[in-house]
Length: 141
Image 1: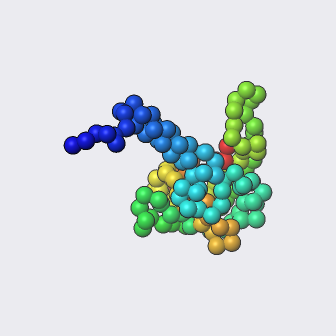
Image 2: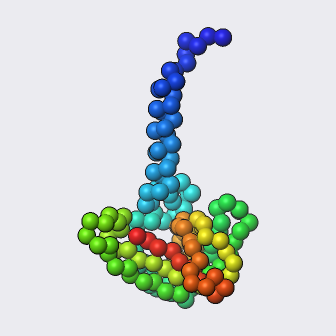
Image 3: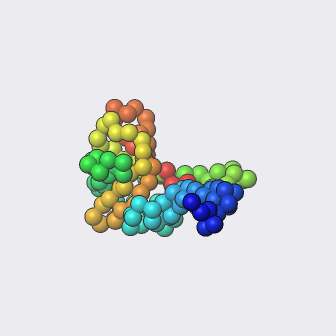
């Protein structure tokens, strides 16, 4: 067995680490995570004003880990959040949150969120307040 075409172990580890870092950045950086999941709307383009006309409207939530997981929630509120104190970095110039209400007992995780008129995007969704009330929050910060 010839090892003439093999790359040195250090080169392999360096390239593998760089690939892992790039993959992690694609999943965490605003807008890039949507491309990774094939969603329509890049997160960095979304602002609170985009959601205002959709308060009271249904959105479909689809789990990415389980293709059959699907449920509807109603957008209850859009809230502008204060900017962080000076010196604290933030990714968005105008942070905001969305509160949805509906199905109870859903886990916090990344979901594809869809509405026929709005389009779709992929975000982390977390239950808030009493989970039995069916309130869920998405924070854009």
